[in-house]
Image 1 (cartoon, rainbow, N blue to C red):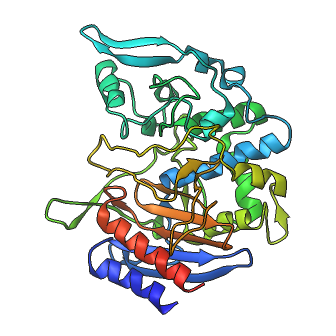
Image 2: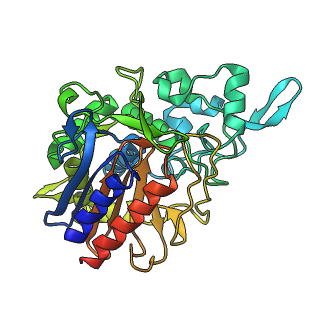
Length: 378
């Protein structure tokens, strides 16, 4: 494992990342853990460093929905509007004219499956230039505000017609709340975190202050500078697209549950059949589309391996030579916390920092070197 550790040390020394924590594991346990650099001023990065995991929250939200699907309280084809009627009031943005946005009614019915696979028609302002234009013209709040009204984005396409990355999982979390009756943070704690022993995963920073990592952004001179970025505290709703805090060991326990086909250390939260369903291509003929950035906070997202979307994450349909196998589930948080879980090879991994821009080349070079070192060590 010295080669893996060397990747982490080199990444910090070369200023590819401000700091890094990485971990690998299999169904039986952790197989590597390492860290390099300072997670905050005067505090070294460590296994117990707490991260704002942002979109790594999405897989947890989809698992929450899958728990209700297994219990017969939802299905992948449940219409969103049947559970949350205000969804039906959302309109599709068809461009702009001198009077402002051109909006029309939805022509198709959005389902749970569309939300989980990001084919609902919702897109973030970071990935579709029409969305920030709409927000500016209408003074619409960002989803990161934590306001319920922020969820009422116009759709950019009709549901079920195209991949588009956005706040769909926030709506999925609200469906879980509406059907189950518990607030989503309580549901996740009682149904996922506690059974899996994820003791450092939560929706507020309370109690984590002495382990919280800092966020930084790369400037024009190539160096990192501190910045403030975090999900809003005590929001009107906890968005399952972005609202969690966690650690590498905790998220590894979540990934090991997937490798364990729904169970970890004797605690089962999903059946094997449910895990099989949620890790299959659920796009119904659509495919993942390269994500072209409309924000200086992120680079474009280009993925190898003929990717599609399962119920919980992006999954590649082809092996990537020297790296992950076909069927691997993977995604990331905007501050460059990344994960993958490869059922074919029985390996899961996280490589996590807190930096912007998202998926900038130096970070992705480090990710590539880390992943290659992990598979070379198998």
